[in-house]
Image (cartoon, rainbow, N blue to C red):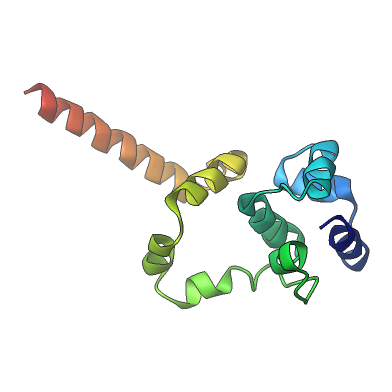
Length: 130
């Protein structure tokens, strides 16, 4: 994976530091994970979506090396979004949200969802107490 990562950095005109910053890791931590082949799928997805380095390239050596970042999300939106979300492992969704928490908290729609969940929890608590 290390050699493929170096090739991708060169083709994408990126540095390890830029990729690490994009996914919220320290460059040294990213380097170690790449060298040990121990970087998890959640980070590989983030690398693909934020930097355009193909997850398949990094994991399996399957080209293209660089992909269009927007295109990585299109399949989810071309089909029924709820069906797509249902097919994704829930732990991966939670991991992604936790990894990108600062960005999610900037989205008004995400904050509205959190507020609705809090209200729903309060209602549930009231119902349980009666």
